[in-house]
Image (cartoon, rainbow, N blue to C red; front, side, top):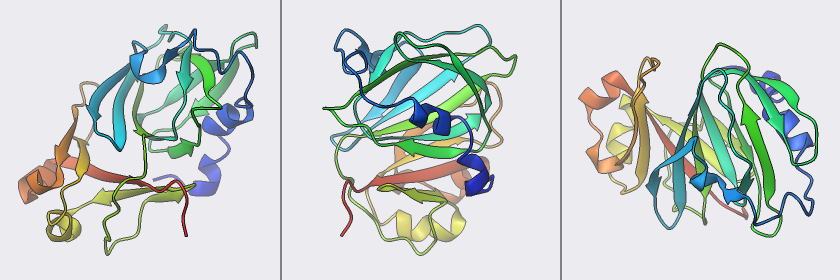
Length: 210
């Protein structure tokens, strides 16, 4: 996993610098992110929505709105072009393995689109926080913790404690090839056999911490 400080200078740093709210950014004329063609919902509960985002060279998304806190787990990185309404395109590099978040709200939605100019593909798993999630105490440290989000990579040492909970777990092929499968399962379905062939992540969000 790349160092946190190095990661902060790429992709979503640029995205964050663009994300000041405007009348255009809040316009309901644009679809919410989970209805945009390249952002495919694969799971939804009252607490979170998980999107499987895949794009290839030449692909361009429609303008779409982000109105919830969201965290991104990057499975395949590339050069990405970003554009807000009535602004110029900006290019940024998104590295494989990067995890980062943006805190958007329903009263300050952010609107943009992205395109892939590079021959390398983009593959991201994005998790929208719809409300605070039920946190589970784990003995391991999170691989990412910032602005209310905590992401834990679940391995064999965490198997017994995570199986005591009933929470959604994001699982993906490991290694993650171009045809990488991503799914969301209940933590009680995890097994030693599954963890030997897949990466598994638990994502928690607390809107305000004590």
